[in-house]
Length: 425
Image (cartoon, rainbow, N blue to C red):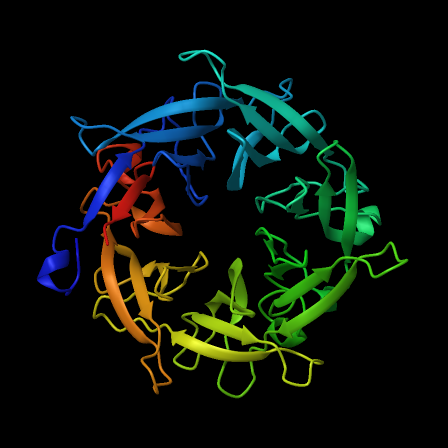
Protein backbone atom coordinates (compact mmCIF):
# COMPACT_ATOMS: atom_id res chain seq x y z
CA UNK A 1 0.00 0.00 0.00
CA UNK A 2 1.51 3.32 -1.04
CA UNK A 3 1.28 6.40 1.07
CA UNK A 4 0.44 9.95 0.07
CA UNK A 5 2.64 10.52 -2.97
CA UNK A 6 2.42 12.04 -6.44
CA UNK A 7 -0.05 10.27 -8.72
CA UNK A 8 2.78 9.36 -11.10
CA UNK A 9 4.07 6.98 -8.41
CA UNK A 10 0.73 5.30 -7.74
CA UNK A 11 1.81 1.99 -9.32
CA UNK A 12 5.60 2.30 -8.87
CA UNK A 13 5.82 -0.14 -5.94
CA UNK A 14 5.46 -3.83 -6.63
CA UNK A 15 6.21 -7.15 -5.00
CA UNK A 16 8.77 -9.01 -7.09
CA UNK A 17 8.79 -12.34 -5.26
CA UNK A 18 7.03 -14.00 -2.32
CA UNK A 19 8.96 -16.69 -0.43
CA UNK A 20 7.19 -19.91 0.47
CA UNK A 21 9.58 -21.06 3.20
CA UNK A 22 10.13 -24.32 1.28
CA UNK A 23 12.84 -25.09 -1.24
CA UNK A 24 13.10 -21.40 -2.12
CA UNK A 25 14.01 -20.47 1.47
CA UNK A 26 12.58 -17.89 3.79
CA UNK A 27 13.33 -14.95 6.11
CA UNK A 28 15.64 -12.95 3.80
CA UNK A 29 17.59 -10.18 5.53
CA UNK A 30 20.58 -9.47 3.30
CA UNK A 31 20.68 -6.75 0.65
CA UNK A 32 20.36 -7.79 -2.97
CA UNK A 33 23.05 -7.37 -5.61
CA UNK A 34 22.67 -7.24 -9.39
CA UNK A 35 24.69 -8.17 -12.45
CA UNK A 36 25.03 -6.53 -15.86
CA UNK A 37 22.00 -8.45 -17.17
CA UNK A 38 19.62 -7.21 -14.49
CA UNK A 39 19.56 -10.46 -12.53
CA UNK A 40 19.18 -10.13 -8.77
CA UNK A 41 21.04 -12.28 -6.25
CA UNK A 42 20.34 -12.66 -2.56
CA UNK A 43 20.32 -14.84 0.54
CA UNK A 44 17.54 -16.39 2.60
CA UNK A 45 18.85 -17.53 5.96
CA UNK A 46 16.39 -20.38 6.49
CA UNK A 47 14.62 -23.06 4.51
CA UNK A 48 15.79 -24.67 1.31
CA UNK A 49 15.78 -28.32 0.40
CA UNK A 50 18.44 -29.00 3.06
CA UNK A 51 17.09 -26.59 5.67
CA UNK A 52 20.10 -24.31 6.14
CA UNK A 53 19.15 -21.36 3.95
CA UNK A 54 19.73 -20.62 0.27
CA UNK A 55 21.44 -18.44 -2.30
CA UNK A 56 18.89 -17.43 -4.92
CA UNK A 57 18.67 -15.61 -8.24
CA UNK A 58 15.75 -13.59 -9.60
CA UNK A 59 15.82 -13.22 -13.38
CA UNK A 60 13.58 -10.79 -15.31
CA UNK A 61 10.95 -12.89 -17.07
CA UNK A 62 7.82 -11.85 -18.94
CA UNK A 63 4.66 -13.80 -18.33
CA UNK A 64 5.42 -14.49 -14.66
CA UNK A 65 3.22 -13.30 -11.81
CA UNK A 66 5.63 -10.59 -10.68
CA UNK A 67 7.95 -10.16 -13.67
CA UNK A 68 10.80 -12.30 -12.27
CA UNK A 69 11.54 -16.02 -12.11
CA UNK A 70 13.28 -17.46 -9.06
CA UNK A 71 16.09 -20.05 -9.08
CA UNK A 72 17.75 -21.51 -6.00
CA UNK A 73 21.45 -21.59 -6.85
CA UNK A 74 22.57 -23.36 -3.70
CA UNK A 75 20.91 -24.81 -0.58
CA UNK A 76 22.91 -25.06 2.64
CA UNK A 77 22.71 -28.09 4.91
CA UNK A 78 21.44 -27.75 8.49
CA UNK A 79 22.64 -31.18 9.66
CA UNK A 80 25.53 -31.33 12.13
CA UNK A 81 27.63 -33.55 9.88
CA UNK A 82 27.51 -31.13 6.94
CA UNK A 83 30.50 -28.89 6.25
CA UNK A 84 29.19 -26.34 3.76
CA UNK A 85 27.86 -23.83 6.32
CA UNK A 86 24.37 -22.80 7.34
CA UNK A 87 22.38 -19.58 7.78
CA UNK A 88 23.96 -17.40 5.07
CA UNK A 89 23.90 -13.75 6.10
CA UNK A 90 25.36 -10.40 5.04
CA UNK A 91 25.75 -9.11 1.51
CA UNK A 92 26.89 -11.30 -1.36
CA UNK A 93 29.76 -10.14 -3.57
CA UNK A 94 29.85 -10.86 -7.32
CA UNK A 95 33.30 -11.11 -8.91
CA UNK A 96 34.20 -12.62 -12.31
CA UNK A 97 30.87 -14.47 -12.43
CA UNK A 98 31.29 -16.12 -9.01
CA UNK A 99 29.42 -15.29 -5.81
CA UNK A 100 31.14 -14.88 -2.44
CA UNK A 101 29.51 -14.77 0.97
CA UNK A 102 29.50 -16.01 4.54
CA UNK A 103 27.40 -18.22 6.80
CA UNK A 104 27.05 -17.38 10.48
CA UNK A 105 27.21 -21.02 11.58
CA UNK A 106 28.00 -24.51 10.31
CA UNK A 107 30.96 -25.20 8.08
CA UNK A 108 33.95 -27.46 8.62
CA UNK A 109 34.34 -26.54 12.31
CA UNK A 110 30.82 -25.35 13.11
CA UNK A 111 31.44 -21.63 13.67
CA UNK A 112 30.57 -20.39 10.20
CA UNK A 113 32.24 -20.25 6.81
CA UNK A 114 33.37 -18.00 3.98
CA UNK A 115 32.20 -19.55 0.72
CA UNK A 116 32.47 -19.17 -3.04
CA UNK A 117 29.80 -20.26 -5.53
CA UNK A 118 31.02 -20.95 -9.04
CA UNK A 119 28.53 -21.04 -11.94
CA UNK A 120 28.31 -24.20 -14.04
CA UNK A 121 30.10 -24.47 -17.36
CA UNK A 122 26.94 -25.94 -18.92
CA UNK A 123 23.48 -24.43 -18.60
CA UNK A 124 21.17 -26.32 -16.29
CA UNK A 125 23.94 -27.80 -14.15
CA UNK A 126 24.27 -26.87 -10.44
CA UNK A 127 26.51 -24.17 -9.04
CA UNK A 128 29.54 -25.44 -7.09
CA UNK A 129 30.28 -24.34 -3.52
CA UNK A 130 33.83 -24.07 -2.18
CA UNK A 131 34.49 -23.31 1.49
CA UNK A 132 37.33 -20.78 1.53
CA UNK A 133 37.63 -20.65 5.32
CA UNK A 134 35.94 -22.43 8.21
CA UNK A 135 35.53 -20.95 11.68
CA UNK A 136 35.57 -22.88 14.97
CA UNK A 137 32.81 -22.62 17.57
CA UNK A 138 34.91 -22.45 20.74
CA UNK A 139 35.12 -19.14 22.57
CA UNK A 140 38.89 -19.58 22.48
CA UNK A 141 38.92 -19.56 18.66
CA UNK A 142 41.87 -17.37 17.69
CA UNK A 143 40.58 -16.67 14.18
CA UNK A 144 37.15 -15.53 15.38
CA UNK A 145 33.81 -17.14 14.71
CA UNK A 146 30.26 -16.34 13.60
CA UNK A 147 31.00 -14.14 10.55
CA UNK A 148 27.76 -12.25 9.97
CA UNK A 149 28.52 -8.99 8.21
CA UNK A 150 29.12 -9.79 4.56
CA UNK A 151 32.34 -9.39 2.62
CA UNK A 152 34.13 -6.75 0.55
CA UNK A 153 36.87 -7.08 -2.09
CA UNK A 154 39.83 -4.77 -2.58
CA UNK A 155 41.33 -4.08 -6.01
CA UNK A 156 43.88 -6.88 -5.58
CA UNK A 157 41.17 -9.50 -5.07
CA UNK A 158 41.54 -9.86 -1.29
CA UNK A 159 38.42 -10.34 0.84
CA UNK A 160 37.70 -8.51 4.10
CA UNK A 161 35.04 -9.32 6.67
CA UNK A 162 34.10 -9.42 10.34
CA UNK A 163 33.27 -11.99 13.00
CA UNK A 164 30.92 -11.33 15.88
CA UNK A 165 32.97 -13.28 18.42
CA UNK A 166 36.45 -14.62 19.10
CA UNK A 167 39.73 -13.19 17.86
CA UNK A 168 43.46 -13.36 18.51
CA UNK A 169 42.92 -13.31 22.29
CA UNK A 170 40.33 -16.08 22.12
CA UNK A 171 37.76 -15.75 24.87
CA UNK A 172 39.18 -12.32 25.73
CA UNK A 173 38.22 -11.05 22.25
CA UNK A 174 34.73 -9.91 21.26
CA UNK A 175 35.00 -10.12 17.48
CA UNK A 176 37.54 -9.57 14.75
CA UNK A 177 38.21 -7.99 11.37
CA UNK A 178 39.87 -10.40 8.96
CA UNK A 179 41.48 -10.59 5.54
CA UNK A 180 41.37 -13.60 3.23
CA UNK A 181 43.84 -13.11 0.41
CA UNK A 182 43.23 -14.21 -3.17
CA UNK A 183 45.74 -17.01 -2.53
CA UNK A 184 43.76 -18.26 0.48
CA UNK A 185 45.81 -16.88 3.38
CA UNK A 186 43.61 -15.93 6.37
CA UNK A 187 44.79 -13.18 8.73
CA UNK A 188 43.22 -11.36 11.68
CA UNK A 189 43.80 -7.63 11.12
CA UNK A 190 42.27 -6.48 14.39
CA UNK A 191 40.61 -8.12 17.39
CA UNK A 192 38.19 -6.26 19.65
CA UNK A 193 38.95 -6.75 23.34
CA UNK A 194 36.21 -7.54 25.81
CA UNK A 195 36.76 -4.03 27.18
CA UNK A 196 33.62 -2.53 25.66
CA UNK A 197 35.08 0.97 25.47
CA UNK A 198 36.44 0.01 22.04
CA UNK A 199 33.13 -1.40 20.84
CA UNK A 200 31.35 -4.74 20.79
CA UNK A 201 28.77 -6.21 18.45
CA UNK A 202 30.26 -6.50 14.95
CA UNK A 203 27.00 -7.41 13.25
CA UNK A 204 27.53 -5.72 9.87
CA UNK A 205 30.05 -5.58 7.10
CA UNK A 206 32.72 -3.10 6.15
CA UNK A 207 33.06 -0.20 3.73
CA UNK A 208 36.34 0.12 1.81
CA UNK A 209 37.65 3.40 0.42
CA UNK A 210 40.07 3.98 -2.47
CA UNK A 211 43.04 4.19 -0.10
CA UNK A 212 42.33 0.77 1.40
CA UNK A 213 40.86 2.04 4.69
CA UNK A 214 38.03 0.00 6.21
CA UNK A 215 35.04 1.58 7.99
CA UNK A 216 32.44 -0.10 10.17
CA UNK A 217 30.28 0.09 13.26
CA UNK A 218 29.90 -1.68 16.57
CA UNK A 219 26.31 -1.84 17.76
CA UNK A 220 27.33 -1.46 21.39
CA UNK A 221 30.43 -0.58 23.32
CA UNK A 222 32.05 2.84 23.22
CA UNK A 223 30.39 5.35 25.54
CA UNK A 224 29.14 3.66 28.74
CA UNK A 225 26.05 5.90 28.91
CA UNK A 226 23.86 3.10 27.55
CA UNK A 227 25.02 0.63 30.21
CA UNK A 228 21.50 0.39 31.60
CA UNK A 229 20.42 -1.07 28.23
CA UNK A 230 23.58 -3.04 27.42
CA UNK A 231 27.30 -2.62 26.90
CA UNK A 232 27.56 0.93 25.65
CA UNK A 233 25.94 3.07 22.95
CA UNK A 234 27.94 1.95 19.92
CA UNK A 235 30.69 3.43 17.78
CA UNK A 236 32.00 4.05 14.25
CA UNK A 237 35.58 3.02 13.52
CA UNK A 238 38.27 3.08 10.85
CA UNK A 239 40.95 0.43 10.27
CA UNK A 240 43.84 1.69 8.15
CA UNK A 241 46.62 -0.29 6.41
CA UNK A 242 50.04 -0.37 8.07
CA UNK A 243 52.39 2.52 7.47
CA UNK A 244 55.77 2.13 5.75
CA UNK A 245 57.86 -0.50 7.50
CA UNK A 246 54.97 -1.49 9.78
CA UNK A 247 52.86 -4.65 9.94
CA UNK A 248 50.01 -3.75 12.27
CA UNK A 249 46.84 -2.17 10.94
CA UNK A 250 45.80 1.05 12.71
CA UNK A 251 42.47 1.12 14.56
CA UNK A 252 40.78 4.47 15.21
CA UNK A 253 37.43 5.22 16.85
CA UNK A 254 35.88 7.94 14.70
CA UNK A 255 32.78 8.51 16.80
CA UNK A 256 31.16 7.29 20.03
CA UNK A 257 27.39 7.56 20.30
CA UNK A 258 26.06 9.10 23.52
CA UNK A 259 22.60 8.40 24.85
CA UNK A 260 22.53 11.42 27.14
CA UNK A 261 24.38 13.93 24.98
CA UNK A 262 22.58 17.23 24.40
CA UNK A 263 20.27 16.79 21.41
CA UNK A 264 20.04 13.00 21.81
CA UNK A 265 22.16 12.04 18.84
CA UNK A 266 20.93 8.48 18.63
CA UNK A 267 22.53 5.28 19.85
CA UNK A 268 22.97 1.65 18.84
CA UNK A 269 24.01 2.11 15.20
CA UNK A 270 22.60 -0.39 12.75
CA UNK A 271 23.29 -1.55 9.22
CA UNK A 272 26.87 -0.35 8.75
CA UNK A 273 27.99 2.87 7.11
CA UNK A 274 28.36 4.08 3.53
CA UNK A 275 30.84 6.67 2.31
CA UNK A 276 30.23 9.63 0.00
CA UNK A 277 32.31 12.75 -0.50
CA UNK A 278 34.59 11.85 2.40
CA UNK A 279 31.66 11.62 4.88
CA UNK A 280 30.03 8.54 6.39
CA UNK A 281 26.27 7.94 6.58
CA UNK A 282 24.30 5.47 8.65
CA UNK A 283 21.38 4.84 11.01
CA UNK A 284 20.82 4.27 14.71
CA UNK A 285 18.12 1.97 16.01
CA UNK A 286 17.37 4.12 19.05
CA UNK A 287 17.72 7.65 20.36
CA UNK A 288 16.92 10.95 18.71
CA UNK A 289 15.55 14.20 20.04
CA UNK A 290 11.90 13.11 19.67
CA UNK A 291 12.29 9.89 21.64
CA UNK A 292 13.93 6.51 21.21
CA UNK A 293 12.78 6.04 17.62
CA UNK A 294 16.13 6.11 15.77
CA UNK A 295 18.01 8.45 13.46
CA UNK A 296 19.84 8.83 10.15
CA UNK A 297 23.20 10.52 10.68
CA UNK A 298 26.16 11.94 8.78
CA UNK A 299 29.73 11.92 10.11
CA UNK A 300 32.19 14.47 8.70
CA UNK A 301 35.96 14.47 9.31
CA UNK A 302 37.17 17.05 11.84
CA UNK A 303 38.56 20.22 10.31
CA UNK A 304 41.68 19.92 12.46
CA UNK A 305 42.37 16.45 11.11
CA UNK A 306 42.35 14.98 14.62
CA UNK A 307 39.74 13.99 17.17
CA UNK A 308 36.22 12.61 16.84
CA UNK A 309 34.30 13.17 13.62
CA UNK A 310 31.41 15.64 13.61
CA UNK A 311 27.87 14.24 13.63
CA UNK A 312 24.85 15.76 11.89
CA UNK A 313 21.38 14.28 12.35
CA UNK A 314 19.69 14.06 8.93
CA UNK A 315 16.46 12.44 10.08
CA UNK A 316 14.98 12.00 13.54
CA UNK A 317 12.27 9.32 13.41
CA UNK A 318 9.01 9.72 15.27
CA UNK A 319 6.02 7.40 15.50
CA UNK A 320 3.45 10.06 14.66
CA UNK A 321 0.90 8.11 12.61
CA UNK A 322 1.18 9.96 9.30
CA UNK A 323 2.86 7.19 7.35
CA UNK A 324 6.14 7.02 9.24
CA UNK A 325 7.24 4.24 11.50
CA UNK A 326 10.36 4.02 13.62
CA UNK A 327 13.33 1.74 14.36
CA UNK A 328 15.55 1.52 11.28
CA UNK A 329 17.09 -1.97 11.20
CA UNK A 330 19.10 -1.37 8.03
CA UNK A 331 21.46 1.25 6.67
CA UNK A 332 20.84 3.75 3.88
CA UNK A 333 21.76 3.91 0.18
CA UNK A 334 22.33 6.80 -2.22
CA UNK A 335 20.77 7.25 -5.65
CA UNK A 336 22.66 8.97 -8.48
CA UNK A 337 21.17 12.35 -7.53
CA UNK A 338 22.49 12.20 -3.98
CA UNK A 339 19.20 11.33 -2.27
CA UNK A 340 19.11 8.77 0.53
CA UNK A 341 16.74 5.80 0.73
CA UNK A 342 16.14 3.52 3.68
CA UNK A 343 13.63 1.47 5.64
CA UNK A 344 12.16 1.38 9.12
CA UNK A 345 10.96 -1.69 10.92
CA UNK A 346 8.62 -0.50 13.65
CA UNK A 347 4.84 -0.15 13.84
CA UNK A 348 2.95 2.68 12.17
CA UNK A 349 -0.51 4.14 12.60
CA UNK A 350 -2.26 0.76 12.69
CA UNK A 351 -1.28 -2.44 14.47
CA UNK A 352 -0.94 -4.20 11.11
CA UNK A 353 1.68 -1.70 9.88
CA UNK A 354 5.26 -2.95 10.17
CA UNK A 355 7.73 -0.70 8.40
CA UNK A 356 8.15 1.98 5.77
CA UNK A 357 10.32 2.71 2.76
CA UNK A 358 11.43 6.35 2.85
CA UNK A 359 13.41 8.89 0.84
CA UNK A 360 15.51 11.76 2.23
CA UNK A 361 16.06 14.32 -0.53
CA UNK A 362 19.33 16.19 -0.39
CA UNK A 363 19.17 19.84 0.67
CA UNK A 364 18.36 22.35 -2.07
CA UNK A 365 20.99 24.93 -2.95
CA UNK A 366 21.42 27.31 -0.03
CA UNK A 367 19.28 25.14 2.26
CA UNK A 368 20.40 23.07 5.24
CA UNK A 369 17.69 20.49 5.85
CA UNK A 370 16.95 17.25 4.08
CA UNK A 371 13.34 16.70 2.89
CA UNK A 372 11.64 13.55 4.15
CA UNK A 373 9.06 11.51 2.26
CA UNK A 374 7.58 8.09 3.13
CA UNK A 375 7.17 6.14 -0.12
CA UNK A 376 5.59 2.83 0.89
CA UNK A 377 4.00 1.26 3.92
CA UNK A 378 4.43 -2.43 4.69
CA UNK A 379 1.43 -4.12 6.26
CA UNK A 380 0.49 -7.65 7.26
CA UNK A 381 -2.88 -7.18 5.55
CA UNK A 382 -1.35 -7.14 2.03
CA UNK A 383 1.30 -9.23 0.21
CA UNK A 384 3.84 -6.39 0.47
CA UNK A 385 5.67 -8.16 3.26
CA UNK A 386 6.57 -6.76 6.67
CA UNK A 387 9.79 -5.78 8.44
CA UNK A 388 11.75 -4.40 5.46
CA UNK A 389 15.52 -4.62 5.53
CA UNK A 390 18.43 -3.35 3.42
CA UNK A 391 18.02 -1.71 0.01
CA UNK A 392 19.89 -1.69 -3.29
CA UNK A 393 19.54 0.80 -6.17
CA UNK A 394 20.45 -0.37 -9.69
CA UNK A 395 21.87 1.69 -12.55
CA UNK A 396 18.37 2.48 -13.83
CA UNK A 397 17.35 3.98 -10.49
CA UNK A 398 15.04 1.18 -9.34
CA UNK A 399 15.09 0.53 -5.60
CA UNK A 400 15.06 -3.15 -4.56
CA UNK A 401 14.77 -4.62 -1.09
CA UNK A 402 13.60 -7.55 0.99
CA UNK A 403 11.18 -7.99 3.85
CA UNK A 404 12.02 -10.44 6.59
CA UNK A 405 8.45 -11.76 6.87
CA UNK A 406 4.99 -11.33 5.42
CA UNK A 407 4.00 -11.78 1.79
CA UNK A 408 1.89 -14.92 1.87
CA UNK A 409 -0.71 -14.06 4.48
CA UNK A 410 -1.94 -17.67 4.49
CA UNK A 411 1.46 -19.19 5.31
CA UNK A 412 3.33 -19.63 8.58
CA UNK A 413 0.34 -18.73 10.73
CA UNK A 414 -0.17 -15.52 8.76
CA UNK A 415 3.40 -14.40 9.43
CA UNK A 416 4.70 -15.38 6.00
CA UNK A 417 8.31 -15.97 4.94
CA UNK A 418 9.28 -12.64 3.38
CA UNK A 419 9.31 -10.92 -0.01
CA UNK A 420 11.45 -9.10 -2.54
CA UNK A 421 10.08 -5.71 -3.64
CA UNK A 422 10.84 -3.01 -6.20
CA UNK A 423 10.18 0.73 -6.33
CA UNK A 424 10.45 2.05 -9.88
CA UNK A 425 12.05 5.47 -10.42
